[in-house]
Length: 76
Image (cartoon, rainbow, N blue to C red):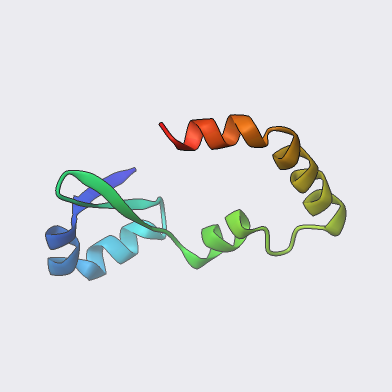
């Protein structure tokens, strides 16, 4: 994954937009990851657009089952 500062991104938005078509680009601010730029296709895939209702139901069940673990991991 490509990692750039917000200033680098602002100064080279075209190049990093092109890079995001191939892989996510992490944009940092004050040495912390702040944003991720990715292609619309990848966003759609991650957001579950085009996913069957059965698959969505299974994902909801698994998320509920593992909810506490996911919450604890998100705090790290």
